[in-house]
View 1 (spheres, helix red, strand yellow):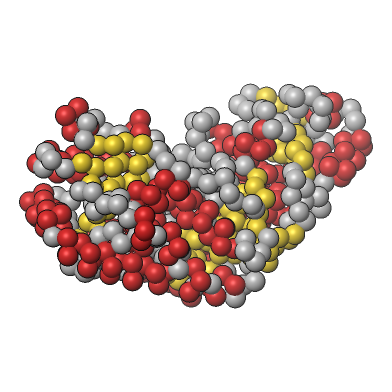
View 2 (cartoon, rainbow, N blue to C red; view 1 turned 90 degrees about the vertical axis):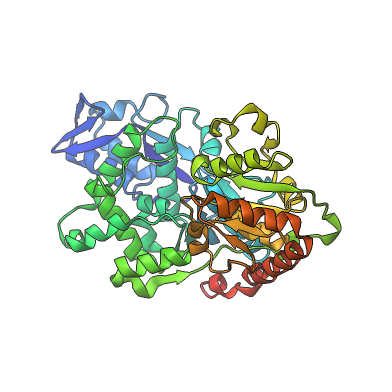
Length: 469
């Protein structure tokens, strides 16, 4: 078996024929069965460096053996990883969105008692204070500048396959597709965000899991899809709706998980309806929050609306409705915190001059929660935004859409703020102005928000994770 702190990886998409290896579209390399099997073992994370060199030594005349480790153009590469042989928790992330922000905060809580390894294509969002060991595409490129996302995924698989852990926490369901086979070696929680994929049910309906779809074939398809996705995209553009291999891999991952945690109530309901065979593994686990982020002495509120999203689909998170509201209320201002301000929808200049657009650190985000009069999240599509729960902790009333309220059962119309259809502009305008005019109403709703969100504190739900440790 490979060492846990070094990773063999295949640089190009590779397909195996009898005594033949196909790379790219036209390149065909004749080889012997032993070398082909060794390459397959590299892909399956079952081959050590010494073992592979031994195979090559026995097949020294094969073309593939003449380009091994020292040639930057070799088919197989080797990356040393500075990680321990064993951890209490290994956390796997996709690297963006509110899910990742939540993951970083959860890791900080876990670190108080446990050793944690974070695997993510990008370093922790909004924080450089994560003391967990971290393997990212950036850290891999320090050892191999030519590494790409496919390299990262192979390292991810190798680490999961060959590092001991008491618990594997896959913090975003999309990453479990890459790990459908190696995650079987661990007790695993798949923490799904609100975007579940009902197409995985098709694998059960057509009984794909009973067919002869081989593991190697699934890996071929997985890495081919990574290779043909845009070079700068940290993921794959295909999905289970159009790809049989990904459909099978995703379904296997759902079945392999010890538990599948759902971020939202609506998601849990739909998952239970679609996947009766995994119903016993499903749990509603809203994001953990920290009541400690609120400091009453820092409160300095002004008539300002607060809007934030870490995602690229800003137009579906309530931003256009915010612009329309500001147009009708020319004295109001708003703070808009986004990671990708270049993706903001077109905004009239006379409106934009009243919107403070910026990217912030975690500490600055918390400061903004203490300034805002209300949090605006009238999304048209949503998972379970951490910013809603964090702003609730900081006593900020919520203006949300039914889509958001479906995910977060803590939200209640008239108690924590108002739940308004984004298409009902008249009601939206009336409810927001009602909150802005009435300080006692804002204070009462803000206090209720904090009371409810405090129930999601990590300390109160520690047993959800620690029973596995």
